[in-house]
Image (tube, rainbow, N blue to C red; front, side, top):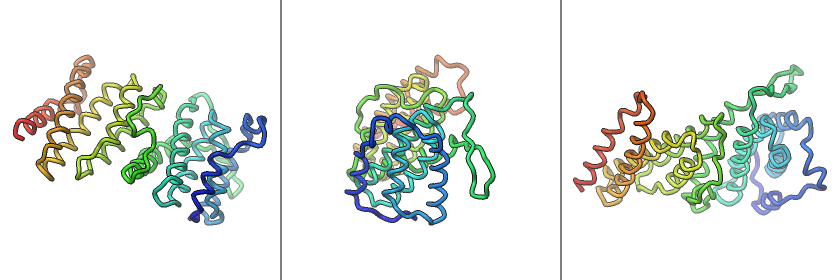
Length: 286
């Protein structure tokens, strides 16, 4: 386990400047191997210095944004750093850098570029394949932690509702867009208080920026609202449920417009008319 370090020390490292312009431009050839070695030391309990781990992993992300496996190997280290802190600004810094590494890992990936070969502790060689592991960290750990932080008052910009200049994921990484949507839905559907603004802000921003998945993300947004409305109605029967149901109807009807242009309909799309009817009934009954 990484030990807790003072927030001030971590913030000092966030604003660290490379020693020279040459250092800023260079991505060392052995960065993947060095990150793997550092990860092995952390897992083995041989490295406990949170700030040191953050410093190295963050510098690797900064210097090697175009190297898929550098960013992939940095993600678990940054996630471990985040988990070493209580909720607050320091955790947000580590998770923000981890999310940046996720984005870099997807953007830099090319099918024609072979994975890097690293040397394992026993001396054998192995190719690293970071894509699947990073996808799991992304939607199972990083996004849920960021949502928890937002609920506690430390809000990442992704949840503010500000539009995205571009989709953070390339079409080749559409699975990550959908996984993030699932993480947002899962978190929102478990809310008893109907407060799903952070999740819907992010999902709407993704929907508007990622043209190649706009129909599916409209569906996800509509279903998020529908589940939140149902949960809220079950818990309190108040006007919040009606408000959420109204949003659900809007998004799901928009989705049906998209779906009509995409025959044949997949099986999961056939539930939408029933969901729309249920939401309209909730509104009229209340």
